[in-house]
Image: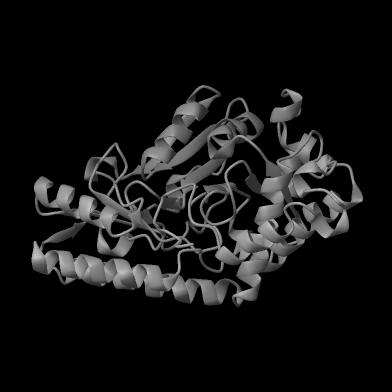
Length: 360
């Protein structure tokens, strides 16, 4: 079977090895006579999968013991609400860095919960860059500062995270977690929908400092309270068991590939292939993001005319490339090159871009 050249923004490409392992065990998981989808989430067989996923993530990201790992549902979109519901106390203000559509949505949900303020924004620049943030401008009594580490629609990514803060730092890392080594201790809460670098859609990973948990709002509805899930190892109700199983396979794959240092090196190589085509095209291709804010996960660009863009996307589809349309809100083109996208596929795309430019 020919696999597509998958550049979808999410749900996105999964490692072929992980899919093959899941296929092998689909009908008979570890001699249980059942699929992992059929196991009780209270069984020892599933509990081993659940805890292995946590262990692998802890190892890959060097997560200290004073953090909890939660496997939740509802995607990052639910976290837009859960974060302020748990952490935005009355009388305090939550600060948001606006760097794209998803941070706008996170702010919108927080505004329904309590007092908010915009710490910094690049909206007036069409979200082409990550704006400079003066940490001193965030009051020490703020509830938290929220950032979106990578912006899938606009193709920008934080190159350096805020330092010198005296308030909790919260990050939506849905589209770039595991793309490179990370100092977890810089953050008090990280959340990430799985469907880019972690696994299939349906699982949301939350990494939260235990000290922050102790200060969370304890009067919330049960399922919206982080402490509910922390106290029950994310097994208060039935979790997305198959999604967590696939997540564990993806984490094994990352480990087998050499860990985050090796993954980061490969991601840099893939991004350079496409950005070199854009930069050397003499204006035929135009990158959306400023050079110092470019994402290694989502390469966004336009061609020098609408007609050329339409022809490019049509011919790319015929050549087997999937998911190159830009987000419906801004148009253009986008190549999402998450961890599981092979270097060979990116090389093929770069070659296609080069040939299209010469022949158009």
